[in-house]
Length: 271
Image (cartoon, rainbow, N blue to C red; front, side, top):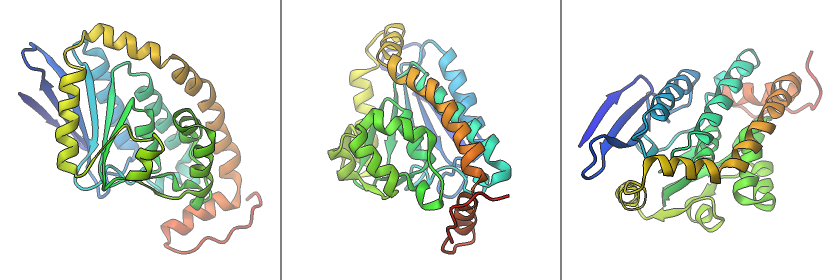
């Protein structure tokens, strides 16, 4: 049985486990725009959905996926402009903390592009399942900025050697390489196979378990992960808003992307 609620920026479906009296798995599908962009409106909507899910003690698993061919192209570049940056970054960091501290297993199911803020969102999830069309990347450095959550989460997930290369180069990571390096937990050949396998995995491995025990177990195994994120993310937020966004290059990189031209770097503070 599946109950569906269509919101402005996403779709939420609640599935019943076999024999369960209450919904025990929630599927959240990002949408509402080309490339499933994570606008501030989408962030607020997703945070509201997560708050409702966390309060429902019957939920044992959350699936996070994108509508259509892609997971998400990431956060809105327009909202990265200096006049919007402080509010957008703060809202996004609150969303990342909500996902990281949900205490309910979150499985990110990734097809197509998963870039920038979208990759940070799936890094905050517990598990990442992908198919061979998936492409991951933190391209922020190419725009003259950096990704605060990924600067913490990638080293935690992959170790510093792999994480630093990803963050410094901004290069895309194809699905097979993402699986090889340990970023992706499960890899499947096609989007249809991925979605079927993700549903089956959750049905087999999570739904038979006690909801309360599962939440406590997830909270326990995430204790260091969550504490590290809570401790360091505010400092990186200040670094981004107060220092990075005062430079010419950060503002130039964002403007160049929006204007579809090559940036001209100066590496000096703007007035």
